[in-house]
Amino acid sequence: MSTDLDTTFQAAVAQSTSLPEKPANLTLLRLYALYKQATQGDASGERPGMTDFVGRAKYDAWAALAGLASDEAKQNYIDLIESLR
Image (cartoon, rainbow, N blue to C red):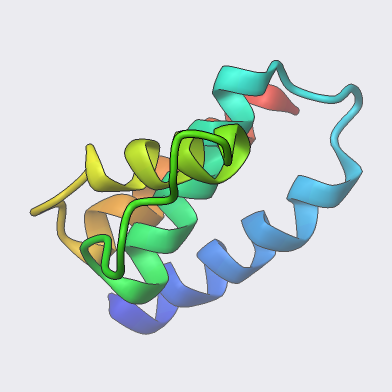
């Protein structure tokens, strides 16, 4: 199943650049966090400083998914992309 899931995930990543309209910022953060969790696992590195608003928001969204399995993150990403199409 993993290879089918990986193939579908990569297709969803490719589709993310050609959605009918740009998703809201919170949705974009969710996509970012799910992608990072699916491809790299739990958040690592230092949390960006207070003046890096975008970096901090991205890191926090990713860190909120700690413990989520890679395959589950991939499936959630796929489902979210499908809902946006």
